[in-house]
Image 1 (tube, protein in one colour):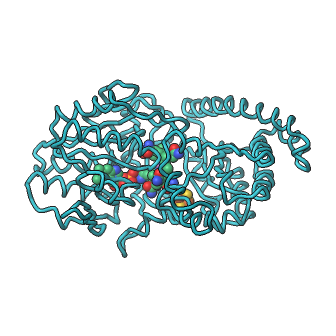
Image 2 (cartoon, protein in one colour):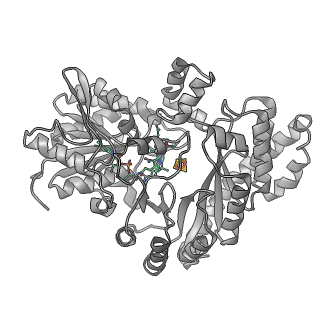
Image 3 (cartoon, protein in one colour):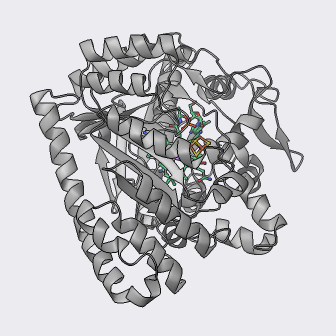
Length: 504
Ligand code: B12
Ligand code: SF4
């Protein structure tokens, strides 16, 4: 460790995410630079109904800042969906600790640095923060000149200065491992402060083996983040197998209740050399049940079979719509119906215990005919599977936002209101259910298809759903109950696999 930081404190704040991979990587980088890092997990992840923060919680964070007198506070702003809380925290802490600079980073801050500068945040760092944040810390500590630092954004003479993105590694092993147990950690939730890293008592561990995604979906920021990357820097970057396995070996030792691993790569790496080495090492040294995210165009039967042998239990895959028109023209997803159906067959034939398919339904681009086509595609998917039916959130900076405005679906003003609506509304949109009566019936019928016991019954109504409203609604209520029950069965099965070391 070099001594540039000489133990100066830096406070990092993660919002609604106690696993917060980005912040954990930053902690490692700053500690290597000789800084003392205090990591605050500000509220827990709640995918259904996250609660706004309040003055008590902001006060608890401000107390830490007052006590530690850090060089700066780093706010990790990954998603726009929590901005209501993020803004309250930034403004609240600024009012209570006016002399401590604020720095924002993360996916959302990378796309909209000016927004934070204009609200009084001192700096924004775009893209990977490991090197840039450390360089900013050194400059502030040594009262040096930071003005030309790559990726840094700040205000000068009342105008935002947005430096080019740089200081990014292609070989991401160079960033080291994320902090598995943050040394000086606090968790703030329900108006209380709890010392310690909340991740360590978890049953699962979340890891990434790569960064970036090769696809270009219009509703996702990945393609927009890629466009910001400097020319010549690879956007999709894998870690070495060794670094992934070394991280998991430490986790196995530290996490007493560990049951399974989530790989949160946008798309799990599939390169021939990498995957073979991974399978060999994971099977030999880790051998815990694990889940991955995939894509219909990335599913490979031979690879999946080998991954199942190493412990793969679940594949989560986006399908998003059963309408080829919506997928291609609206979502910019170019897989065909056949490719999707084949991918689900491959997943089943590879022996993957659980397949979970995501759809985004009931948005202004979708017609009743599109919903009907989704129902008929889902009927063709190889069983068994779980369906996650979501609504569509318009995320700032994504391509679908401009499409909706250009096509006259919403005005720019209305779009701003939608994208920056209160948190509760945004999460209601995420879990939205159809409100057109016929659309609602197609939605509910689609949902029922994931249960074998309900399938044959629901199929009787597909010629004329409106004539069977009550029957469909009754079956849907049953399906919702089954969904909850099945969730617990699935978790139990995974624990069972862990205890008895069963794979495949
Ligand atoms: C994995 C992932 C998740 C995981 C997170 C797991 C974990 N352990 O952290 C899960 C599934 C939980 C998740 C949840 C959600 N996610 Co998500 N997620 C991702 C994904 C695919 C990768 C993020 C990641 O871990 N990258 C690897 C780490 C190392 O990189 P990083 O987080 O970007 O951090 C680096 C830099 O950004 C920077 N940095 C980060 N913080 C800070 C802070 C400072 C001060 C500085 C200087 C730098 C800095 O340095 C870090 C190290 O290099 C991204 C896509 C993407 N490309 O970013 C979407 C993404 C961030 N998610 C998104 C969304 C919408 C969500 C949810 C709101 C979904 C939902 N409806 O619940 C929640 C919100 C979670 C939260 N609390 O913020 C959107 C956000 C866009 C937006 N405008 O909102 C993204 C961009 C994908 C998309 N759809 O476009 N997500
Ligand atoms: S495949 Fe997933 S991560 Fe990649 S661009 Fe599409 S939605 Fe985003």
